[in-house]
Length: 338
Image 1 (cartoon, rainbow, N blue to C red):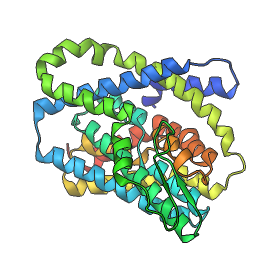
Image 2 (image 1 turned 45 degrees about the vertical axis):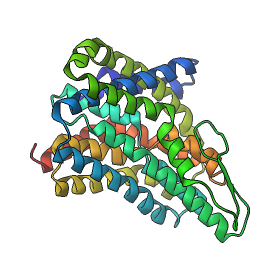
Image 3 (image 1 turned 30 degrees about the vertical axis):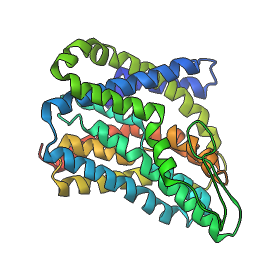
């Protein structure tokens, strides 16, 4: 309940309510884009400053290894479950969406831990960056495989800009995996996060002191403003789910909980701290509603955008913001001694 009284969370709830009553309240796209970039830059700096202080430890290496493992397991297992209820292209699209991560959910979780005085490693921002791309690669590879099996011409385009990167057919030369990796890791938002982290590592304590007003005092207010916009977006996407299979929609709730459970077990076995495990759970339970849907719209045109986009933003994002973050954090600290 205390989490629901947080100003940032209350602004998210307000945004949802404003959207449901069809208010004309809206945040200009340019402002929304700026807020997203600011939050990623601030998060990267915080992570860099923390890494400069701690260095590369066994805990850092274990956390990053767990993140990569979850990034592979979640979409692979999700596809095996979902293909029993929907067509293969919809199944891989939903699995990829849930196999990737939500930066805003992660940022909100970081703010939650900081507010409650719970320790965590800044390197978890790097874990978030590592978890975004594997699901995208898996989706494109699987989509090409399905098209080849159907002996149908395949058009594959990849990139958040919507630019076509490769064309392949059932007997063609295939797509360039290197190109996929390049687009995934040089996407503007992703690159800003990693670049800001590098700046934080190089500048260390002096940089932390200089940037404290930017990454500290402004952070909470701008996060609240951005969550207001996300609430409006979530409300607009709920109607897209009308008429979809209840069994598939149930995955938007059951899937994240199961993924968080896997992350909890993995974090405990790997010896991660409670704070780092809780963030790993949040990442595993989140779903992409920006990067992956943008890629899937062009890379897997056979899939239904209202399904995977509506599920991630209309159901899973609000669930994690309102309930998931405090629940996952409580479970991690109950199971693992900090």
